[in-house]
Each structure stands twice: as structure tokens, then as C-alpha cells.
Image (tube, rainbow, N blue to C red; front, side, top):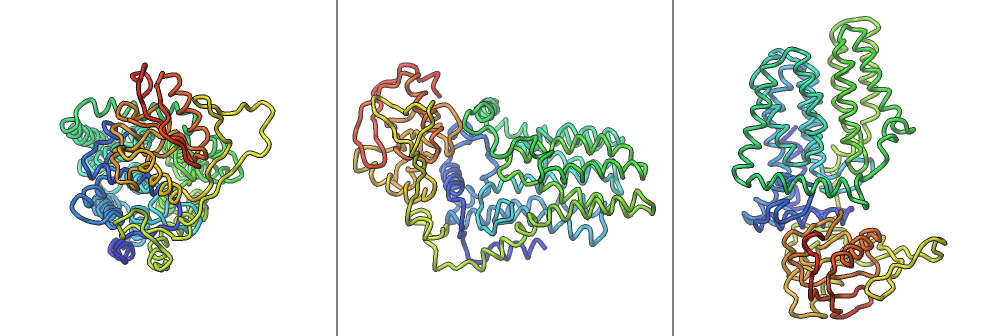
Length: 512
């Protein structure tokens, strides 16, 4: 299964994506900067952990094109997950069950779509999929003790996966830590728990030895910035909607059914364990774009396994629970599993390179030929006009055509000021013009804006777009520039933005 997944994913020698240009710009920014030696949280402001793009960055540094490095990086992640997958699955599952579980885990790791049900091709938010795959192995190990429940080897696998998730997207292990600890202790698997904790501490201790204690302080600061962001603390529905909305209620009922029928077969520990994992997975889904309940795949497998232990109403109920969970998650998993084949069948002649000089990362040409915007025609009565440095800013927001906009503005940047050598601080979501204009990125800058003024200390210019990708981001940045007492001199103005040169920073220490 892993070989089939790899073969489908690697055919074509690069990556051709059809959607989510903004996320692909974000990913490209991270990979290129890490490839050049930048360290997450020290040199790049981001809530994503450094291992999320490390395989891709190392492969790019070794000479692969950007798109090829991204695709092969997924294969590296898949190879890393195979040993714990085999160790955990083969001690608990039948051959058929192991094959299904392996298909889900390898499919999530090597997919070319974030999830959902739209027929897209993209590596957007790949780190969520990697963590869903890793967490599925951990959950299976905790729910089903297996043939060697007190295995130290399984503890090492669990600890390694939890540490790896901390270095990819920390919300996963933070949410899962309590149910994992409770589940292992509840079933008397203290030796396994101690091995897991020890392994996680060794892995994270090694990271600390290489990057220093300050790495974790910077990581925490980036996470707190996102958590307190007025723009986007969570990228989707309210958490209550994930439990009680028309789409969320069936998911909640599946968790309730697992609790009820688990009790009917004598697994009283399932009630507290399922409740804890349900809370953890709801939090994780709430933090992930799309809010997909991917965790239902492993719940379906657990229900299937438990239902094989006997006959009676409880076991029949568990079979129905497994079927219900499988039906709910099937559209998302089918999209994930089919995405490599969709990539193979994509018409390459309708594509163009995302970045100049690298044909291995391509996008749909039509999506880079025009840009579109939403313009306010009649403003609400209580809305005041946005003003920055004495100039009214238009109520306009980009709704499509990010790549062509970045290319146009990057060319205008160097025309307005031929001496500019680095990315300006942009009053918008993205600071990616450097990739299109041959500039260098800002030290401490962010590929995706959440809050503050990341990169201000290194910036020489500020760019204020007339039609940003996010009006709230523009307003927040311009407000903070005023509060920080940054002195600006206008360099020039185009039809799309105004460029300022920074001539003084009265309170820069409190602005970043």
C-alpha cells in the first residue's frame, strides 16, 4: 500500500496544484527559508513547528526542485511512520483490519489534498494530515491494549510520535496528552507510559540541545500570538458547532454510541477514555481548517475491532457504530486517498510555474491570469473610513488572483526603489514578494500574518496595499505602526499600493 501510494504521488517528478494558492505560497515561503538555514520561531514567526517542512527543506537544500522536494518530503514522512504503524497495528488487528488501517495512515501521510470533499490538488496544510496519521496510531495503541499491552517498544513508538507531533503542530500532542496518559494508566500499562514519556523527553531534549531553551520560548510566543490574534485565532466554525450543528451532531452521536455499547460489552473504561479523546479531537478539529473529523476513521476501526469479541446487543451496537463512523468519514477519506491519482491525471499543459526558475512546482495557469476583488459599495452606518498617514484607504479586499497580484507588486517594488534589497513589511496577510522579486525575506518576518509587527526590526520599507487579501490584517498592521511611533517617508505610489521608507522607530521593542 505504501509503495502504491508513493508511486502514484511521485509520478510526474514535481507538484501541480489546482487550488489554495495562498497556502502554497505560505508553504513555499517556509520551505525556501528553512532550506536557506532559517530556524522556525527564531528567524520565522509561525505557529507551525519546524519539522512540518524539514524533510522538504533538506531535500531542496540537497538540490531537488521546490515541488519535487515537497512531494518527496511526504514520502520521507511516510517512511518514518511505517515502523510505529507496523508495530502497533500488527499486534492488534487482523490482516484485513491492518490493511485498512495502513491504507488510512499512508493515505493521510501522502495525500495531495488537505481533506474535505472538493476534488482539489494541493499540499495546503499537509502538516495536519501528518499529525492525523500519527495520532491515529497513538489512539489505536491506547484504546486496544494488544498482545503485549505493557510493551516498552510500544511506549517508545508512542513517545516518538507525540514528540514528532509537538515539532509539527503542537495542538495535537497538547490535546492528546491527557487521554493518552489516562488510557495507559487505566489499563495498568505504566511501563509503556514511562517509556513513552522518556522517549518524548529524550527527543525534545535533543532539540533543546541543538536549538537552545530560547527555541521553546520563541515557539510559545508565536503560539500565544496566534491564540490572541484578533484576526484568526481559529480557522473555522465555532467549537460548539462541531458538537451540536446539523453536521456535528452525528459525529457526537457516534462518540456517544461507542461509550454506550462499550459499556454493554464490559469495557467500562471506554466511557471516560472516549469522552477525553472526543474533547481532544473536537479541539484539534476546531483548530484545523475545514474542521474535518478525520479521527472518525480510527474510531470506526476501534468499533470494528471491539465488535469481533463476541455476540449480543452490545457487539451488534459496536458494529453499527463502526459502520456509522465509516460512513461519516468516507467522503473525506475517499478524497484523500484519490488525490494522488487525481494529480497524475491532471492536464499538465494547462499549468505554469508558481515561481520563476523552478518548473517543478506548477499551478493552474488560469488562476494566475487575473485578480478579482470585493469592493464595499454601501458601507454600514457605523463604519468609519480607514485612514493611514493622512490618506484614505479603499474598502477593497482581494478575492482571487493572489499570485498575479504578488508578481505585479513585486515588479513595482523594485521600480519604485531600485535600492531595496529585502522584503518590505506588508500591511496584509502575506510577506511573500521576496520570492518573486529576488529580495531576501525579513529576519523574524512571518509568511502568514496573525498579529503584531513581525520583522519590523529588520525592515527598511512598509507596503500598504489598496486592496489587501485581508482588510482586518491591513487595519491591524497600520494601527500598530501608528502605536509604535514608526516614522515613515513615502517613496512612491502605484495603482495597487503605497511604499514607505522607515526613517525611525520610537517604540519598536513593543511593536513586534
